View 1 (cartoon, rainbow, N blue to C red):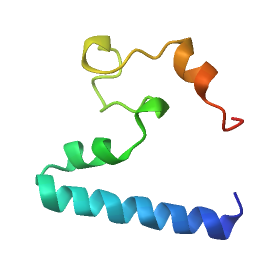
View 2: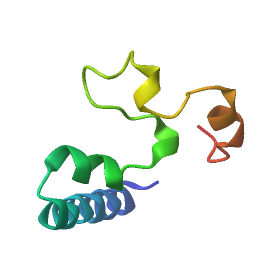
View 3: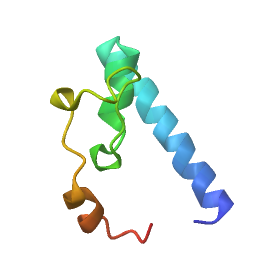
View 4: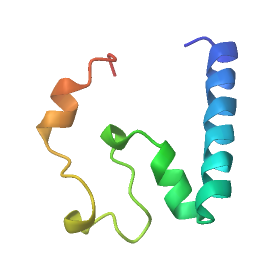
Length: 68
């Protein structure tokens, strides 16, 4: 993405996280409700605990068609 479009995307993401926080009153819950789950983001300290998040197998990598 061009820098200008990336900045717009980031502003929208930040806005969505703030709105989610206002609804949930929990930063962790708000942050992870906005992030795409296919990116495999997990809270610090839970990165090695596979029982608390979706498995990060080949399925996510194979179905990710955005060219990364």
